Image 1 (cartoon, rainbow, N blue to C red):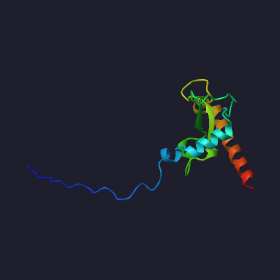
Image 2 (cartoon, rainbow, N blue to C red):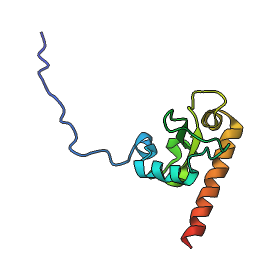
Image 3 (cartoon, helix red, strand yellow):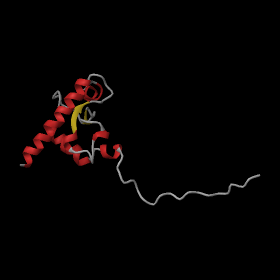
Image 4 (cartoon, rainbow, N blue to C red):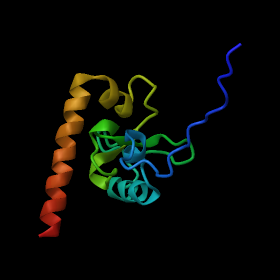
Length: 120
Protein backbone atom coordinates (compact mmCIF):
# COMPACT_ATOMS: atom_id res chain seq x y z
CA UNK A 1 0.00 0.00 0.00
CA UNK A 2 1.27 3.48 -0.92
CA UNK A 3 1.35 6.17 1.77
CA UNK A 4 0.42 9.54 0.27
CA UNK A 5 0.69 11.42 3.56
CA UNK A 6 -1.03 14.64 4.45
CA UNK A 7 0.36 17.61 2.56
CA UNK A 8 -2.13 20.52 2.80
CA UNK A 9 -1.59 23.68 0.79
CA UNK A 10 -1.54 26.89 2.78
CA UNK A 11 -4.31 29.39 2.14
CA UNK A 12 -3.25 32.72 0.66
CA UNK A 13 -2.75 35.47 3.24
CA UNK A 14 -4.07 38.28 1.02
CA UNK A 15 -7.61 39.31 0.25
CA UNK A 16 -9.21 39.67 -3.15
CA UNK A 17 -7.74 42.68 -4.94
CA UNK A 18 -10.47 43.26 -7.50
CA UNK A 19 -14.03 43.53 -6.17
CA UNK A 20 -16.59 41.14 -7.65
CA UNK A 21 -19.52 42.42 -9.67
CA UNK A 22 -21.75 41.73 -6.68
CA UNK A 23 -19.54 43.95 -4.52
CA UNK A 24 -19.44 46.72 -7.15
CA UNK A 25 -23.21 46.53 -7.66
CA UNK A 26 -24.11 46.83 -3.98
CA UNK A 27 -26.40 49.81 -3.40
CA UNK A 28 -25.19 51.60 -0.29
CA UNK A 29 -27.74 53.18 2.07
CA UNK A 30 -26.59 56.71 1.19
CA UNK A 31 -27.03 56.00 -2.55
CA UNK A 32 -30.51 54.58 -1.86
CA UNK A 33 -31.45 57.64 0.23
CA UNK A 34 -30.17 60.05 -2.45
CA UNK A 35 -32.14 58.21 -5.16
CA UNK A 36 -35.28 58.32 -3.03
CA UNK A 37 -34.80 62.05 -2.44
CA UNK A 38 -34.25 62.67 -6.17
CA UNK A 39 -37.43 60.77 -7.07
CA UNK A 40 -39.57 62.43 -4.41
CA UNK A 41 -41.25 59.10 -3.62
CA UNK A 42 -42.43 58.59 -7.20
CA UNK A 43 -41.39 56.17 -9.92
CA UNK A 44 -38.82 57.94 -12.10
CA UNK A 45 -40.29 56.42 -15.26
CA UNK A 46 -44.09 56.49 -14.93
CA UNK A 47 -44.50 58.92 -12.02
CA UNK A 48 -46.63 56.58 -9.88
CA UNK A 49 -46.43 57.26 -6.14
CA UNK A 50 -44.70 54.47 -4.22
CA UNK A 51 -46.08 53.27 -0.93
CA UNK A 52 -43.20 52.76 1.55
CA UNK A 53 -45.31 50.37 3.64
CA UNK A 54 -45.67 47.93 0.75
CA UNK A 55 -42.25 48.71 -0.77
CA UNK A 56 -43.71 49.41 -4.19
CA UNK A 57 -40.67 51.51 -5.13
CA UNK A 58 -37.38 49.74 -5.69
CA UNK A 59 -33.91 51.07 -6.30
CA UNK A 60 -33.10 49.53 -9.69
CA UNK A 61 -29.76 49.36 -11.47
CA UNK A 62 -29.85 51.18 -14.80
CA UNK A 63 -26.96 49.03 -16.06
CA UNK A 64 -25.89 45.50 -15.27
CA UNK A 65 -23.66 45.08 -12.22
CA UNK A 66 -20.78 43.68 -14.26
CA UNK A 67 -20.64 46.95 -16.26
CA UNK A 68 -20.12 49.08 -13.14
CA UNK A 69 -16.40 49.77 -12.86
CA UNK A 70 -15.79 50.88 -9.26
CA UNK A 71 -18.98 51.09 -7.21
CA UNK A 72 -22.63 51.95 -7.66
CA UNK A 73 -23.32 55.69 -7.62
CA UNK A 74 -26.52 57.74 -7.58
CA UNK A 75 -26.31 58.00 -11.38
CA UNK A 76 -26.35 54.20 -11.80
CA UNK A 77 -29.74 53.65 -10.13
CA UNK A 78 -33.33 54.84 -10.41
CA UNK A 79 -36.34 54.48 -8.13
CA UNK A 80 -38.87 52.44 -10.10
CA UNK A 81 -42.20 50.81 -9.31
CA UNK A 82 -41.74 47.14 -8.64
CA UNK A 83 -41.14 44.41 -7.79
CA UNK A 84 -39.00 43.41 -10.73
CA UNK A 85 -40.58 39.94 -10.94
CA UNK A 86 -44.09 41.35 -11.55
CA UNK A 87 -44.97 41.85 -15.20
CA UNK A 88 -46.20 45.36 -15.90
CA UNK A 89 -43.94 47.19 -13.45
CA UNK A 90 -41.27 49.62 -14.59
CA UNK A 91 -38.53 47.62 -12.84
CA UNK A 92 -39.57 44.50 -14.76
CA UNK A 93 -39.76 46.52 -18.00
CA UNK A 94 -36.15 47.79 -17.79
CA UNK A 95 -34.81 44.40 -16.70
CA UNK A 96 -36.51 42.20 -19.29
CA UNK A 97 -37.27 44.23 -22.45
CA UNK A 98 -34.99 45.76 -25.06
CA UNK A 99 -36.94 49.04 -25.02
CA UNK A 100 -36.58 49.16 -21.25
CA UNK A 101 -32.84 48.55 -21.37
CA UNK A 102 -32.48 51.28 -23.98
CA UNK A 103 -34.52 53.69 -21.82
CA UNK A 104 -32.38 52.84 -18.78
CA UNK A 105 -29.16 53.55 -20.69
CA UNK A 106 -30.49 56.88 -21.97
CA UNK A 107 -31.75 57.88 -18.51
CA UNK A 108 -28.37 57.01 -16.99
CA UNK A 109 -26.64 59.24 -19.55
CA UNK A 110 -29.03 62.08 -18.66
CA UNK A 111 -28.23 61.66 -14.96
CA UNK A 112 -24.48 61.80 -15.63
CA UNK A 113 -24.91 64.91 -17.80
CA UNK A 114 -26.99 66.61 -15.07
CA UNK A 115 -24.39 65.82 -12.43
CA UNK A 116 -21.64 67.30 -14.65
CA UNK A 117 -23.68 70.49 -15.10
CA UNK A 118 -24.26 70.77 -11.36
CA UNK A 119 -20.53 70.42 -10.64
CA UNK A 120 -19.66 73.34 -12.91
